[in-house]
Length: 263
Image (tube, rainbow, N blue to C red; front, side, top):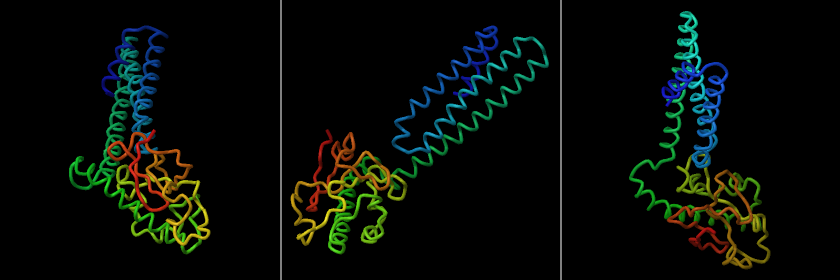
């Protein structure tokens, strides 16, 4: 792509005179930059801010390639040997740097993708395993929530709930705080949100979470589109589309789990 951009800029510099050529090259560079940033937005949302940074670097590399080609083509058009040679060398150096930058960026993106991918088995296998693993995770989190509530007389507060030491100490494994459909269990993507309507709520006269009012109908934790640590809201961020065969898992206050279709 960088070479194609360079050639396009070179032809523009060689064939389009004066300000029109410079404007055309600048416009092409700008359009390329915008298209790459917009086109990678969905991937950035899925994989995080690092992908956004890499997309910006790649977009800048393409824009530089266009302008490098224009500089080289413009120098040759001037018919001055030294100017032509200097412009061409500068353009080739810049586009070479662009290609190296893009290659390194792509390498980093592939590294991220490999880190997030299952360590073994096919995609079909992971699709089968993820729902069951998610249910297991939610059951472990429920057990930890219930023990916390019995020891402290109520549920943990919403703020940084998945970093609350008293709660986390009751979770058997850190990976259980991460939904397996969006995380490898060790990264900065979590995928579960805490219902703020019950966060910090006292047990009152109930001995366990199951005995609390409307426990069978009240969401506690659920698959969320917010992948950040400590995600919490009033049950408004169900992942869309559904994360497990088109549905999201919701853990209720009484401990049962339902597969729910997001609206």
